[in-house]
Image (tube, rainbow, N blue to C red):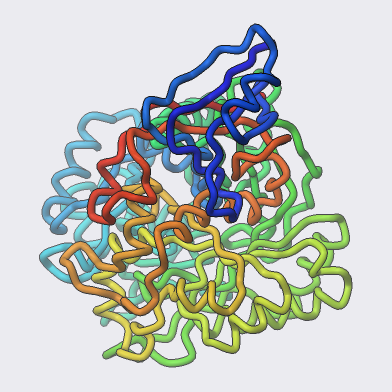
Length: 520
């Protein structure tokens, strides 16, 4: 049995208390006791290692409760990464080069463009893709993953023509001649998904291994993959059995995949040290940066108001089925219209023990004050992404009117209403999933150009760190084991080179994570 006593540094339990202990004792991967150094010296076993922190900071490891782990790994291994491209021309060059290097690929797939950051200021179309690749189908996914662009070969391979029926909760956009322009959204993404080659178990495994190495370097010891399909779940279960998971994975199975009209079967409930399955996922609307989040008003300068993906009765019945089997519900809802639908369904679920499970709303981009009151009454978690303000803020400023913009991702209001808040990244929707960057964004609330977005919704540094530690553990339903440095919990901890609670906000990203430890 290993015993270690940490002392002579800043020990931040992040358990809601402001006082900090002088020392913390870890035994065999579990936190045993914290308190005064002299008292602990007399109680630890004789084989204890004394770890002098030398003024550094010991605190809980970060938890990201909403990140598409395998998709992060896909962009590190197989898929072309277009995040950060500055023009359609640059995108075309990267696609052409990728296609030349991979003649074996039946489809060319890429992800990450954002039209707001490209010099042309518009969405690419099939004609843009056809200019560089005509012999193979191409799918380019927008950074939000709610919109894709196909070349002509991709449209034909997917069975998308002018007469193709548009699925409920999706779009097949047409050009001025009434022909598909290549842009599809939401549930219509199911068309190419049905015909594209899918990764095999070893490919998924490679993606997950690559992603978890990147997470560990960022101090993230636990992650939630929030839209897991059955084949991916089999891989997570295999990796958990073989012991190759080094980050704790909370896998949330998807109930209604893109393009499906029926729900998938419920999975098994699972709770092991490195794999947890206790929640299922629904999508109520789309993404705010791509104008598919469902709003009560139109986006500025358009007649668009987003996409509602679920019919309410169907949503309720499938959510009730899952809740009755012991699953919590996590629903993607960004626009005010979608949030209202989700709350209506959750309130119906509450009549049959919903509050005991404590459901989640993912993102919560534009809630009204009444929505927050309803969430607090139901005990619903808000799992949101402050990094969106930085990376996608230009889209918000372009597409939202002044009233909507003033309450975009309103974290101060969320906390003041008594709603439990957890922070995450939703990577690879964003490139930067460093929790320290997200924390800075929750405080500064600026986009990449320095424009403030709803600055009155800023929160404190302690509140932001809580949302990335204990708040995230609570949203995952795993707070008995992780999220704070309390006796009885797993020793998922990290050592930082300085105290983040005493670091200027502008310097938070410069904090160095010197080591990361995970308990048994």
